[in-house]
Image (cartoon, rainbow, N blue to C red; front, side, top):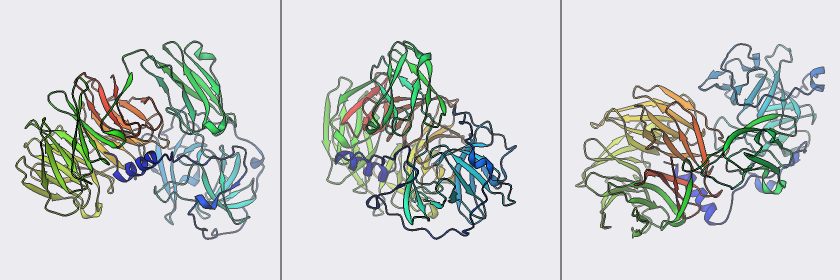
Length: 584
């Protein structure tokens, strides 16, 4: 499930009316002084060398716009010397860290290895200065500036030839291996100020208009299905989409530079053209019901809904984390609200073979059960501040749960007998999602250790390290292919691991500000997941093909997801106060 710190922060912002938007950056600004009131960034140490790098004739040219079709090269041939020591991760993603421990970060190569897509900087053209230092000239397509950096003059220090200044690119202190983005913060040593430069231009998502929707979608800073193109600098060539969809530009203040409106059912490809001339294919899909059709219904859980599960009678049960309630919704739509003790903070809820629903009370350190009639029984855990998070019934008939407070997996019988199995101390806390695997073992996500864990019903533990560092594993589910599938809330990816520990990771159409949250196996043979911050419902096939469907509003914050009695996927929406339904 979603890390509780993220959901509390997002829900607090939503409930207080704060959208938490990014700071606008003028697209044509060479370097805009940043408001000190918005920053807690300290002055960095001076660069290790103040020698101005050599200028070359190349710096007076503008490289051709990159091919932004999303193709990644997995070839290791022809990589510039600057990238010596890089580590190949998966899906064409590389990671580079210099000998002094400073990270260049995560990036992918395009088919031409002189072009890279840096996950924080955006598109860069790389040229060799031939100075014998394995250094690099970088042409930054977001700002149209040439930079210089090298392993001996290490990134995040760069020399900006447009500003004639040394810059320091601030790391993202909340996301190791990454740097500030949208806006990107730099320290300009020439003027002694923190400045911003235009943010990265990301490849827009495929826009899917499902269920006969006529609602437009934006391709801007906070789109339902796209990525940021700052201001009104981007245009679209919609000539290939005649009748299927149209495009128009909007005011920069709306955070959407392009709005796409669906027409008749069909598929086509628009071309997004940014200010630097980059031409990016934007696939459009307009469908008819029922696939992907989303409907909303009022819900008693209000604006703090968290998790969702169905019982054997077709009722849907949800937890309301801030109002300390459990809500039962019958197939006919009748709802009953059951109160819990104050600050119970119910999180995960699952059905049991005893006919009751079982849930974790994060706030009061208890495991609870509730009968179909609403009678609640609570069992206290023996260790204080265990902070139970998610729960599932195991093949042994007992319920297994994660303990975020002191890194353990708990087991409780229906009579309330509790056994606890610690996970490695190095993980410190916050084991999170949990499920039963196809091998009959208990599988869980270990967020701080960046691992997927497996525990037998006898308590024997094995953990598998995720190849991508800082993936942020959140929720996990058994798939129809005999593997385990999990969400990566920090990396924005969907992961798959076999029962023997072999990993595959799949990129989604967009990972900008997105947080894939809970995941389940759907009735259609696919996996379905919620995108908490991206306000989307996602579907991934066992072969890794991803489609995403925007919810009806931007700040819905979809959380839990479950298969309902009608064969549709139902999901909670903490931001809208409604419960959603999407047809597979």
